[in-house]
Amino acid sequence: MDKSQLLLGLAVLLFSLGLLGVIVRRNMLVMLMCMELMLNGVNLSLVTFAQQANSTVGAVLVFLVFVVATAEIALAIPIVLLLVRNKRTLHVDAYDSLEG
Image (cartoon, rainbow, N blue to C red; front, side, top):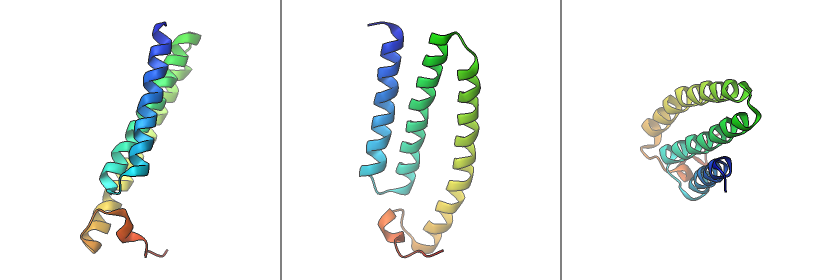
């Protein structure tokens, strides 16, 4: 087994663990952290594929994913704080009556 296969295996493990956390957990902040774990798995796979192809495109895509993840957190955290202020809980099932 070479280094790239190990890195891809780790990327799949990170993504799977994050997906499992999003599906199983009901706390909004934990779900956001699990989504970030999924993004880190994707970043690791992008870097691994870019290393195999001797290309810098993977590094540019990782930078783009980091920018998107930062924007996601910058928007999600204030929304979560406003919802918590309104309902006094972080449990996702408490917000099923929201209408937009």
